[in-house]
Length: 268
Ligand SMILES: NC(=O)c1ccc[n+]([C@@H]2O[C@H](COP(=O)([O-])OP(=O)(O)OC[C@H]3O[C@@H](n4cnc5c(N)ncnc54)[C@H](OP(=O)(O)O)[C@@H]3O)[C@@H](O)[C@H]2O)c1
Image (cartoon, protein in one colour):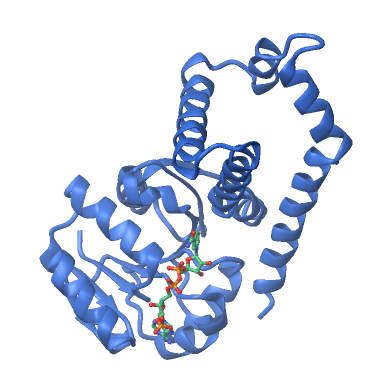
């Protein structure tokens, strides 16, 4: 598989790491178009891949897949550069938050497009990638996409594109919510009088163990929560306080804000 990236930032790097560790492509078959010279030098040195400052090289590289891994704010300028240049057999894969398939098709004049919402645990092969495709993408190209995304963690194909904006708010931004939760829990340990190191260790392992339990037991989170919550006990006191402070409602509102922003970014 020959693969090019436009935008050599954090998410591009996560995908490159996944591809190389799964050997889905050789480093000689990966090209990254990135304007920042320092970044190009780093990517080349670290992964032995090819880099270029010119976005159109990403297409002229005989790439099977061209990944758009740029910020939504530069999407219009980049797709304008690519307009009419893609060959019919080339697959354009966008991870750009909010960017609709229709916008990408119209701005590039290319109809074989995949839209993916990955998340950062992809860097360690534990990500979630939700994706959809235009009708022009055939079964073989869908298989190629699944092969590309598989090493990054789980990949889930959805027919309905609106699920991608929803996934952006849930699993795309999700790691940040969890990190914020972890930060607050560590803060809570410190406020009780613990050292930062001890609080850190306790919280990280609690999150790891609880996530594994969720995954391995297949039990509903509410069931698992009930198992640690005895009436009148310490957990019950904490959960009542969380409830009183609107924890669940705040989280739902936060995800809705992310969803709204994803829709807004699609209109840029
Ligand atoms: N990070 C996440 O968790 C995550 C998850 C899911 C989806 N996404 C989506 O993935 C996309 C990339 O995110 P990211 O976190 O990788 O962003 P990032 O780290 O900012 O990477 C974007 C890269 O694109 C480069 N760039 C800027 N203008 C360009 C141009 N005209 N042509 C080519 N490259 C250009 C930037 O270079 P400069 O730094 O020099 O500007 C930067 O290296 C975004 O649309 C984001 O919404 C991100």
